[in-house]
Length: 324
Image 1 (cartoon, rainbow, N blue to C red):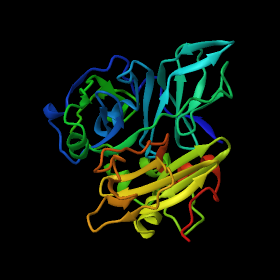
Image 2: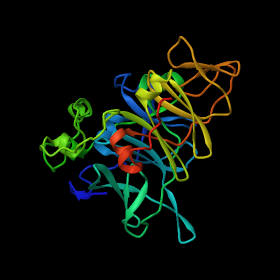
Image 3: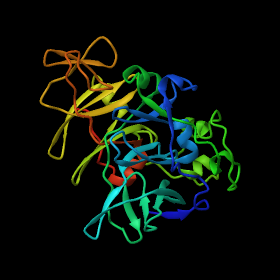
């Protein structure tokens, strides 16, 4: 793992006092991507805001402290609990953007112990809490339109405002324009990592041809077991994959809004003619929400949504689901 300084600490400001608005009041495009934390109400965090902040120190609807984290270079969306065991006690951490990258991934730091954390892994890589691992929360990446349809009473993060280095041409933070798209060119290009984003000509190599480096992957872990599900492979399998990760039986759905994973109670799901819906156990199921037309629901699994190169950096070249 290669760690390097890229920006001054907090040049990209975390959101520490988030406020929310009803999803019906969201003024952006219904196709805007959001990271969703379930609850009553469910809350959505627009990626167009996260580009400029990368971390939101929040709480879910039940009051549990969580960190909604996003690394644009890695396409990595992960929600973590912010409580960790320290010396036999439980401590709540608040995270900021360190200005460092570890293998092109955001390095977070916590303001309580000054430990540093690799965002995609949720593991402290330096400082007093080195080796401590954050708990991953179930979360989904979808669109505002899909979130609104599934959660008409849901809430959306209000635009935090302020200044960010992501809005600047250099390391000096500038006022944020959330209608800008600072990573659009990066997402469209073949290259990956900081060098590709900055166009410095020293891009990393990618030595496999079965997956593009920025293929969207949904990563699941269970203890020491880790398996990443590339979206194109799930789509090629009929948009539904039944698998095991460690001791856990899982089902992974590809839907028009993305990729979703749930604990499988033992059902054999089959795709229907309607995209994003599946049948099993005498019911029709929505692959994005895990809800059935007879009132049942699947348990969404803790997961990481990220690019293939970042998953491979963390878990190795063999930690991907292979089509049978």
